[in-house]
Image 1 (cartoon, rainbow, N blue to C red):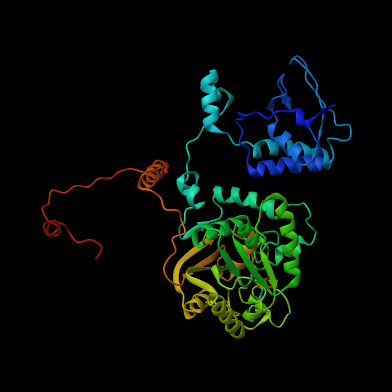
Image 2 (image 1 turned 120 degrees about the vertical axis):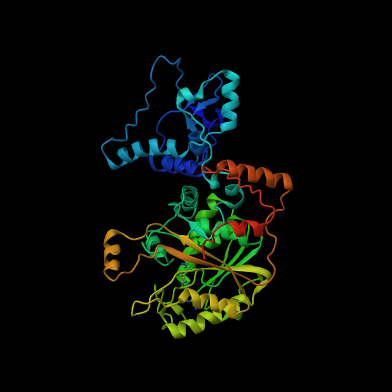
Length: 461
Ligand SMILES: C[S@@+](CC[C@H](N)C(=O)[O-])C[C@H]1O[C@@H](n2cnc3c(N)ncnc32)[C@H](O)[C@@H]1O
């Protein structure tokens, strides 16, 4: 018997491992126990299996069994407790392949230099380094995660991949209860299993928050906005009417904090219309950012509590909603942003309620400037049947939400200043990324613009 501590990690591992891949390795080890062997050299330095050895160490597998060989026999690991044709056997086979795929992230520079040094042809092993193809793969992705455009497409590969990592943290199976489905339903995305988009949270905090600043969320619902805020080192204060939701959030935090360093979010229970009472729970009363996703009127009714604005008729809803917005804004520091995620809803006659416009008006009436509007594209949306049902009445499937951004003064300079060289290098890199970039140069020999206007027909009028 040996000890895992006797193994030495490869200090030049070509595989940098992905966060998601490592979490999947741990998950696989936890669920199925150890499977295939790892490979070490004569000095116990790991040639293959650095990731699995690390994951094993993480979850407390100490013992090793070392089989010495010179490569002329196949070392067979026989799991006497497993049968291939069973759920466990088949899932283990899936996990074995899936974890390898998920955990592979080449350290391109290292691999190139070692391949050069030893005369190894990496391409003969099928390893080709592709040039980055999207803006998100380049400097814009590094600085902004997703390009800050007015169409935020959550179906982009970079977004989907990042969301997966967050989900493994926020929706970790560890300590998760069956009632999670109930929890998920309460956080506003149809389908039951989805959570508020953690990547959107990251971007909002990075784009409109102050690094290490405070955030107030008057309709906090689920745990995601708080956990992502805390993981980014922000101080998050979220209030919701429902005790059971906050209990669930606290449980979620307990799980997530095992996986990530998170500044503990402060969640309070109460009616956000009674703002003084809400604030009495907090040690800070002025915040650097307002970020929330309110009830979309009665689209989803959260409880029968008379203070729950989701069970009010629209007129009463709007009155309380506007009051909560105005009172939240009163607790925003000057020169800051409020980011509000909403979606349009329909009235009983099928026409639009103008809820998005009413939300904009509420912030404007509270003294803020309507500053950005982005569409969050959340997928094709809707199974065939739903699409057909809606189209019978010529209604389009709603597959977007509206991100409204308001400011209450000058725009704070949240991003690190960049020097001219860095900006030029970045522009250069972005230019290379553009697949269809071409220069079209137009020259004229006219002396002045009036001569040109006289000689050409008018267009566009
Ligand atoms: C749309 S949900 C927010 C959830 C959000 N979609 C998310 O992803 O987490 C709105 C939340 O507002 C809460 N709510 C309704 N009326 C409230 C009030 N008067 N004060 C505080 N929270 C309230 C509901 O309990 C619900 O959790």
